[in-house]
Length: 220
Image (cartoon, rainbow, N blue to C red; front, side, top):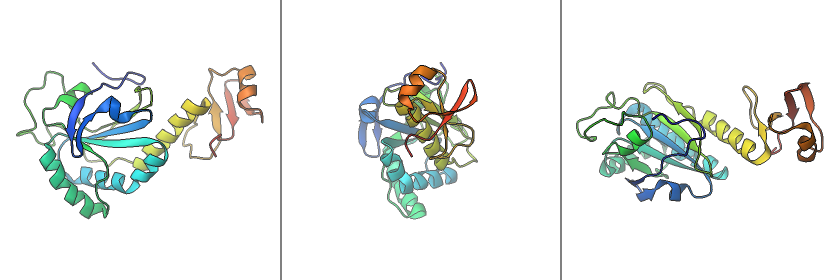
């Protein structure tokens, strides 16, 4: 069954490059980003993992943990980690799930539920749909999912922007307009009527349309 925004992120226990993890316990009371890979020792994925290692502190500043997933064994992940450090100049500083039995990929609808076998003998092309990013909130609900082709490296700066936007919505009841960047004006969500908005935004707002009310970024 396909996972949608506001569905509960499926819980699981799995081995990782940093030991066993129970996903919901690992997420705790903060945010989490799970990003998946079809196979170890693949070029695009190696650049992604090295970039996340370099920018992990930006996720941490936002109260967000990161965890990778790849359809291979822990031993393969640990060997790949040396390449990732060599490419990015920073050691791998977050866990990578060893999804050698395909359980998490199937649980998150990245592979068919009736897919048989294990990682043994599978190629990146066989697993090409294991390329989705999931942003999970403190309530363990999926806030965003985004799937990339194997040939296109993911834009983690954009994923940080989505995280900033989702945190603003959760904490301040505002949404973000097209092409928004942190610090720019935001939008009062429609669920907040004008009477409630007076308490939340005492400095007032700009009414562009009755349904489009702009305010300063409350986190700026």
